Image 1 (cartoon, rainbow, N blue to C red):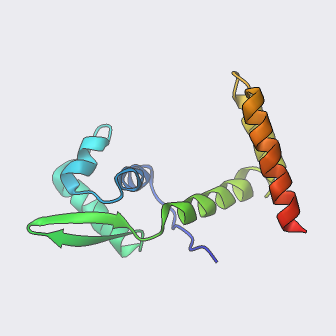
Image 2: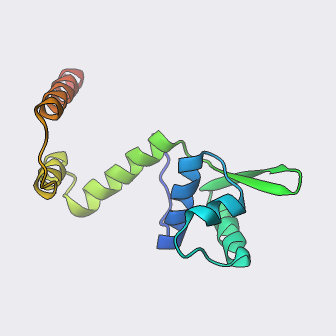
Length: 128
């Protein structure tokens, strides 16, 4: 059973996203990746909160703390999608896919449709 990410504020999500992109990051690296980065002390406080919440862990490398996610990215994506489906689409993948297709004004290329059809067929076979 995938672990569930706790509720995160907008700023906490930005920080976690930056760390997922880098896999492991120092305070300075995280701050460089954030729009309107908070002060150094506010950043360190937020990182401590994320460690207490069980979202991040850290290792020390000399005087530098390197933060990394506790939950693997694939697992975090799965739980985030489940939360999104539950919150906005009544748990329906069909409703979510329909909404995605309606919001992408460029449409899908023939190759993308083919790949999606194959994914759906594979999912159908593994369900049975």
